[in-house]
Length: 565
Image (cartoon, rainbow, N blue to C red; front, side, top):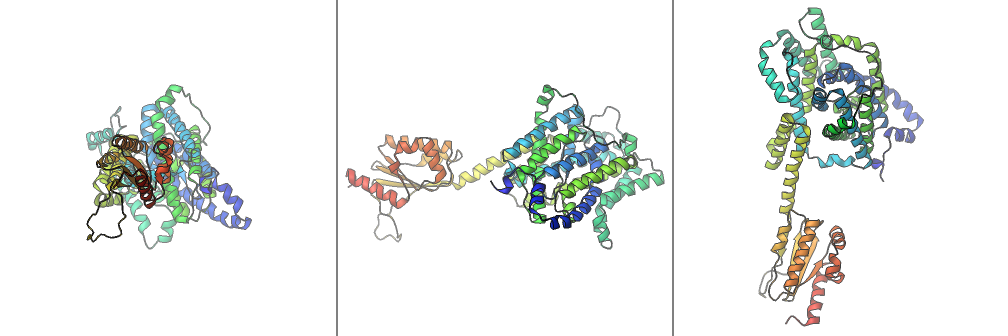
């Protein structure tokens, strides 16, 4: 077992294999990086808590509990975990329909699934999700998140009882109540959005702008505008009762029926958490030239998610933006993620009451900016221009279904299209062709093997699976054919359907009095044949190492029987 496959927190390995001097030199850098990331995570955690349909402090609870545990137990040196935009719409939907009890049950299920995936060594799962699928559902989530922020960004007022769970319902409510737009709220939102986009691009203050996140600047400007100018704009304090209490363990009444009803939601959260966290780990690896332990990360994500909801939080996963901020700030060990969580504890205890002053259009602007960054529209547009028609179909379908329905349906449909297209592509690469016979002595074709007239040769190139087995039926023999050689050096794999096709070929040859000889059968196909009893049926002596050996064997059989003149 390699180091990457081990279920062992990477922090323990870093401590074990680093000298005291190396640890002493890195510790101050990790502490500073943790503080910087906490500044970045603070407004995002509050905003994502609200976007998820829970209270602002629950977003911080997630960043604290899940962030600390995943950093401590995880498989990445620099991963920062917490609430993310990818979960916001999913969590909001669960909370709206099933309440916090439903969310807790779904997240516990997701945590258990993540732990099981880790121990089953499924950390390589990310390799099996095509880029078109991840691009499609990420863009779909971004659009869904953006649509959900338009109400607060525009300062709209909805009548009591308006249902806005699904994206289509949100769009309908927006259209019906567009006349209630609050121009003051829109101005605050636009100014904050402009700051979010322009602050990092100010060249004169680049050193300052790199250290102070634009989201924090937008948040402070929004508070100043509403408080000092007395604008008629809703704030967090108008909608939520701010609680600065530290997270405490709480276990609501959970029933077997509730867990059963939340299985689909739990699977959705688990799939998304696995994909998002492992993608973030891959990005982080490229930034620091390191390797993460994918299986360990999955186990840590599972533990962190379970603990998060039991302490009042929501689902969490690796956050690429916060992880990148950690790397840029000098973080190189999980200690920076743990410090980030501890700093957020201090903020929660001493500064949380001031969150009541944050305008809702500012929160909406921050989330619109997050949605823009996570949308990956450049990748989306590039794929539309350069990918094959099938890949584009998978991309667009995944994108549309994520917006209209949910992530599970979107990923399922996208993967189904991708698998079908992959099988079609592979089957087209597989060929079954017979050798041509040249009888003219003046033929320009040279270096040909001499065959007895009663020996026929077919070559199979490519994997033999259920998508191409009909081509085996194209193999035919002549009336004078006594031996049929199947050359399989180009066959890397053989499945049960392919095996059945070879058994049918054997029956066809037996009916026509033809004996089968196999040349150069690779390891996996040979094991499949042995398990099926096919090698024993044909006879081990009829399986030869190469084509020359197979032809020589056929010639010996012909001469021995004197069947060929």
